[in-house]
Image 1 (tube, helix red, strand yellow):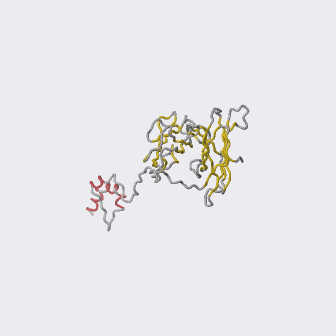
Image 2: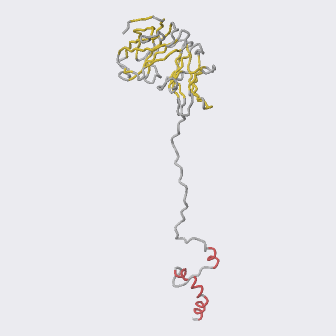
Image 3: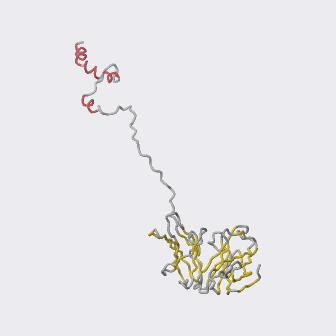
Length: 307
């Protein structure tokens, strides 16, 4: 009893302090008291049954598995990479560009360089909104600038704007050859009529008209039959300078056979002769669908049967 009284007397304060722990630490009727050092070292420890702390983390940025393509500000559509072209002959180069991509773009244009021979030659804008629209363009390579040489040739198109110091480029390599097998086109053209006369509607005789009528025949398996295509006529001065390019604003629907008329006004009444070259093209006027036909005319001349 004395021992029990001594434990109760001496431990009453301890029992009072550790009463809650003692009630959960009774084993076979005995009270377990923690050692002093254990009590000191565990005062800041979390109980073993407490839930773990959740540490907020920043949401991870999802990874994009698709690589964003670089914008193509200029592209050469024709001739294509590795194409075989005739040495020393005129070559039509055509393509697309960003044009005036926004309201801040000033005087954006495309120019062409062949085999590094400078200066760059300005291309002709053929975009749908007018003479300054280089969203579509072409350039006729002629000996006046340079010619395709035998072997490898590099053609480069440059896109630049007056208010942007940076230019963008696209290049293709072509092979110059002395002979090329005739390409078989799905549509065949023949000249039916042509004239170079005073403009019929002109009252002061200052404008002249060049007209070419072509007859066409398409192969039965031609995939473009009953689809919209276009026709382009280029008019050249005797020295090879391109004077005018004309085409259909909205194209036309091609049939198995038919007749197409191309005409344009020439404002220079001093011009006495010209060469007209006509060809059927895709609707966007970038890829040829037929052979090209050429007509050389002097002022006042009419050839063939007028339709």
